[in-house]
Length: 327
Image (cartoon, rainbow, N blue to C red):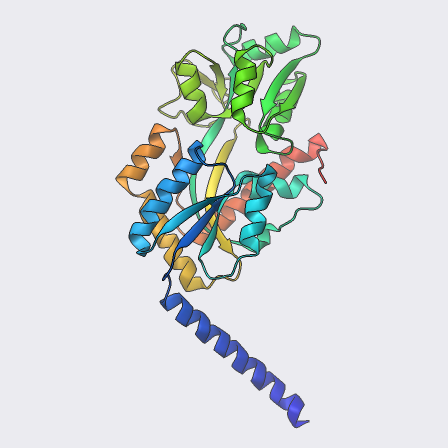
C-alpha cells in the first residue's frame, strides 16, 4: 500500500525534475551551432533564402546557424531527420507546404507525422507560375485554354515530381479550366525548362523568381501567375488567375521553420524571436523582394500552426476529387 501511495509523488518529482532540466536547458540556449535542415539541393533560390535567414538568426542568437541540405521527393529525408533529432532546438526544419499541407492527403504511409514538428514561424512564400514555350500562341489564360482544346491529346505540363504541389497544381488546372492535361514529372525545374525551350514540353509549373529570369531573357514565357497579388518582379502584361476570372486558382510555395515536438517553450520563444528579427533585416527584405518572395512572419508560433492547419484543410479539398493516392 505504501509503495502504491508513493507512486503519484514519485511521478510528480520526476515531472518537476524534467521541467527544471528543461528550464535550465532553455536558459543556457543556445551554446552551440544550430542546424537548419533544408529539403532542397544547395544553390536554389529557397536554399539561398534559408542561408540568408540563417546568417541573420546567428546575429540574434550569438552562435553559428548552418544549413544542411537533404533533398528528396516530398521532403521525406529532411522531415524524418528532424523528427528523430533531439528536442533541444539545435536541429530545425525548413518546412514547406508539400511536407505539411499536401503530403498528409496524398500518402498512405508517410514516414513522419506533421505532429512530430512544433511550428516556430512562417518565413516566406512565392507564387507558382505557368511557363510556356515562346513559339506557341499562348500569352493568356484564354489562349492556354484554346490551345489545349485545339490539340486532341491536350497539353503537357512539367512538374518537379510525383506527389509534389506542382503535380497537384497541374492536375488542378486541368479540372478547373476544363482541359486535358498530362503531367510530366522531373526531378527539378532545370530539365523541364530545357524541354519547354526545346518544344518537347508545352508548359511547366515553376516558382516566380526563376521564371521571371527565364521570361525576361526571352527563353520562356510566363503565361499566368497563381499569386493573388502582383509581385514587383512579375513582368508587365502577365495575368494572374484572379485577373483572368479564376479567383480560386491560387497557389504558393510557402516555407516556415519548425522544431521537433517537445522542444522546451522557452527555446521555441528564443527561436521565434530570432526568425522575426531576421525577417525584419533590411538586407533580408531586399534580397527576398528581388526574388519575388513575400515575407510571412508569424506573430506567434501558434499563428503559424493555425496557418498550417488551414492550408491542410484547403489542399485536402483540392486533392480529394482527383483521387490521387500514393504509397
